Length: 562
Image (cartoon, helix red, strand yellow):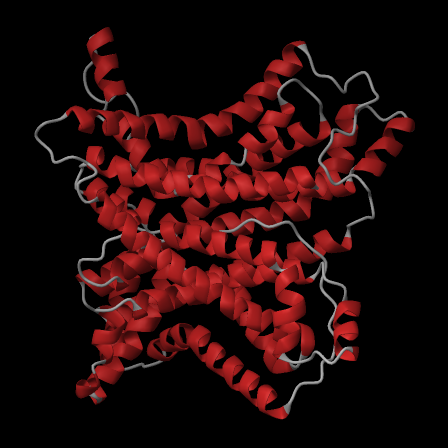
C-alpha cells in the first residue's frame, strides 16, 4: 500500500464547460464506475445465487474448512495488529520525542522495510531458519544437537513475525506525523508545569497518537488480509488462500465467491475503522509549526540521550530495520551468490531479461492508465463536484483496499457467465489470454493510489488560478492542459511511480490473470520459492526489493523537505 502524508481537502470551483464536454465527462465517469464496480458486484451477485448445490457447499464449508479459515485469519490479524502497533509506536516516539546520536539516520532507515515485499521476506527467513537451513545445521554440528532447534517458521506466528516487520512503517509514519504535528506545544506546556517526561509521554503523546496508530493498524491489517504469497508459501489456511484453493483446486466458483464475500465484508469494516481514525486525526490537528519531526525536548536535560537510554533507543530503532530489511536482504544474497557459483543450475539471469521486460511493460502501462484516469477524475471533482463525480472518486479511493483475490474472482465470474451465453464472443480469451484482464485488475486496485497523489497536488493549487484562467478565456479541458498539468508534474510523477512499484510487486491477480508465457518477477519468485529453488528465486526477489526502494527514497525526501 502507498504511504502519503495527510493533506487538507481541496476547494472546488465551478467551471463553465461546453455541453458536449459535460456529456463526455459524464459518460467517462459512468464507464469508470462500471470498471471499478464490476468485480465487487459480480462477487455479491454470485453469492446470492442460492440453490441446493450452493447450500450444500456452504454447509460443507461450515463444518470443514471455514472454521479453520476464520480462526487462522483472526489469530494472524490479532498478532499483526499488536505487533505493528507496538513496533510502529515505539519507533515513532523514539525519533520524535527524543534526540540521540543517529536519530536522523533512523528517521529514514525505519522506512526501508516498505521496500521488501512480504513474500520475499518469507522466502528469506524460511531459507535461513528452516530445519535444513544454515543456522540450524551449524548449531546441530557445533553443539552436537539432534532434531529441530527452532520452532517451525512456516506457521501462523512465523507469518505474524513477517507481517509485523514488513508493515509496521504504516503505523510508524502516521504516528510520527501525528506526534510531530500535534504534541509539540502540549508537551512543552506540560514540561513548564513540572510534569516529568514519563508522564508527558503517557498522558499527552500517546493519547494524541492513538487515532494515527489505529489508522496505521487498519492499513496493515488490510494488507495482511490481501496477502497471498506468505500464506500460500507458509501453508496456513487464511481466507485469501482458501479463495484460490476453492477456485483453482476445487473448481467451485460458488465457494470462491462466498469466501470472497466474507473477506470483502471484513475489509469494509477495516476501511470504515481507518476512515474514522483519519477523521479523528484531522479533528485533533493543531496549527503547530513543527512538521519536521524535530525532537521537542531540544532545550531540556533529557533531550540528548546517553548511556543506557541511548543504547535502548538504538535497540528500539535498529531491531525493526534489522528484522524487516537488513537480515532478509542478507539471507537472499546468500542463495543468490551460491547460484552464481553453481554449475548444475542454469545462470539466474538466463530468463531474467524476459521476466523484467514483462514486469516493466505491465507496470508502465498500468501506471500510465491509472494516472490518466486519476487526472480526469481529480479534475472532475475539482470543477463539478456533483454526486456522480464524488461517488466515482470514492469508489476509486477504496479500490486499493479490495484484496487481489476478490478482484480475480469478481472478474472471472462474469467471464464464465458470458462464455455460457455467448461462447462465440471469445470474452474468456480476451481476459485470460491477453493483458486486458490483469491490467483491468490493476486499474481497480491502484487507481486510488494515483488519485490520492494527484489530489494531494491539487490541494496545493489555489482556486484563484482557475478563476483567473476563466477570465482569460480558458475553460473545460483547456484548464487541465494549460494550467493544472504544468503544476501537477511532481504529483503525477509520484503517482506513476507508486502505481508502477505496486504493480511490480502485485502477486495474486498477476498469478491468475497473466497471459501464458508472460511471467513477471513476482510470479517467478513465488513459483521458484514454492519449488524450493531459492537460489533461482533470489535474483527476481532482489530486483523487486531494488524497485521497492524508489518510493522509500521519494517518501524520505518528502519528509525531510517538510
